[in-house]
Length: 540
Image (cartoon, rainbow, N blue to C red; front, side):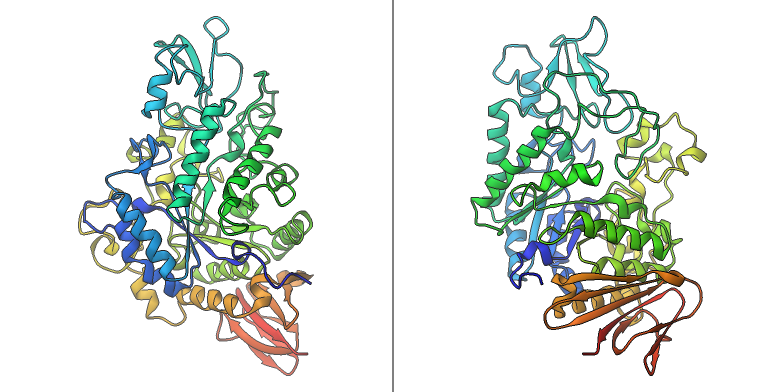
């Protein structure tokens, strides 16, 4: 049986905020830090325990904050450092935690470090980025970026090539230079000293590359996949997931341990097979958690979820714990995969909040926010330009969106103009469904998706079996998924009917929660409505 005193980060519910789109406090069309402050009571009422905020650091905003020009300053459109300090204080006063997005792999090409580095081969910052001589007029090797195109970019000023794992204006830092590592670790300490509770680490598996810069081998896979979003006919054998990255995870963990064991935590965005990404956890001395992205591409069947849950249980047995994520700022909203059906969305929430995992929600999922319809020609996302040569019919077949604007639209607070996000024209238009899918309207409906999330999170907190119990898999026959969560004091059964017909399940206990009012007990049989789920406390 599991430990009664699991660290807080193993039991928490994480909610991602994309600050540009959450709430605009000063009516300039852009969400900001004070906007988040004004909505903390909403997050508290939802039951959220940990807030993850996408970057608000100083940035030219070419990639909307993931291109950082100063790690210790705030982009003026979001506020200032005093606003952030107040946010940290107010989050903690409500008994919640706050983690920040930390982009350690690269900076903006407008960062003063890069501006200095590219001046010459012998300046003080010369070796702060990855520079190489070319092969004649060609790039140093065949490494590509993780998006689609080339990874090497020529600088006439320095007469060398620099490497960028993502987009050309985001040059990679050189962590084989001790000065770089020290500066970035001190940056982490800077934010920890201000009281943040941890970090989400952007593309952490790209940081260290092969020291010998060997060419990557050919791959027959052109398309993105859950294990790697790039594809691009290349196995990234020498440019990602190097053994040195696993060591870097341990070094970074040691920095957080300076602030007390298990008091702060790290969750890594790392891509690859489960066998590979698991290495970032070390032996309890690496990253605390890693995102598992298989669930982003779920298939609507009890069998698929059963296989995924069992796979996670096998790969991440206690004291390890998997994560469960359905969306983020880089991917289509999961409403697309359930055909925008709110009943199906309720089942996804039920799964996410009752399996043995740390659930990570993306803002707006609790009200069923849908993907926007934004033409590539009008896109603000720089990724859209990378794929401008591909036809729309092909792009719609891909599981990932090349125009990330569609999942980054303003949060829908009420039925007023601009969904209550701002009185000014928002940086992105709100979706067409905001009048029906918004916080105010759904909060008044006891059967809404929003109130379903509130009930689930509250039940998860109240029952130890749900937030830290073992998971015992039962079955997936007849397209009904059944599993138990078990602790010393209780045994709770989760039953999810993925089918379009009523099903009957043999079970003895008390019905704690159901997504349908038509689910009911008759003696020792539970009649469970089509496309609905239930939670039952089992009898002794």
